[in-house]
Image 1 (tube, rainbow, N blue to C red):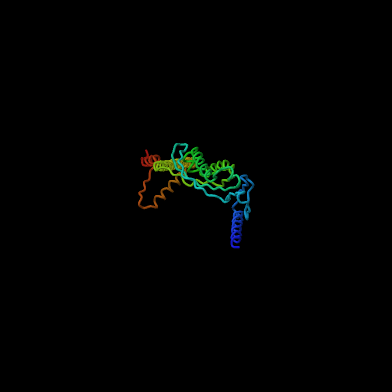
Image 2: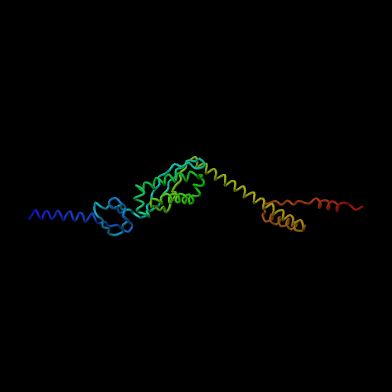
Length: 254
């Protein structure tokens, strides 16, 4: 009797172990790629999944968005400037069967592809474009990665260049270039102001030339402005014609 009971207990234990190995529970964001005797037989999940032990195998795949940090890459720009660039990649699995069957390790494959694509795309642009056109570069890298990883069942949702590191000498050169650009703009603005002022003076001279009395009024207005400050000394220039007229008045009549 004890031997038979032990045998029943052993059989019950193996039956429970077999049943436990046949049950799988998948969360809402998980899928299971099923293989029966080595052949692909479909994608299961989410929920409770039953499988035949030792006959069927299942690979668990996560469908959530994965954040991949692309390591810093040494890039030589189109204008021969050496920079270090790192980025972050957002992607997710859309076809679980392809991510398991078509590529051995989709995480490692995507990481290596992102590094080579980052160097290739940025090497075609100048340093100014890297610093000022990041949105365009992000879109270009995303489109290339998305098209190449489509065969692996992966959708690249976003690529962001985090930081562009340049040498200290290049930083000083960029600062000098920015300063020279500001000086150039200041000179242009000053020249444009002088041009506009000269044009307005010509127009004013033409108007005053048509009305000689306006010159006298302008002259009196200038004197009034100077007289408001008592610390100034007023010098009144006398026209040559007025001096001649006064001299004529002083001469005795014959």
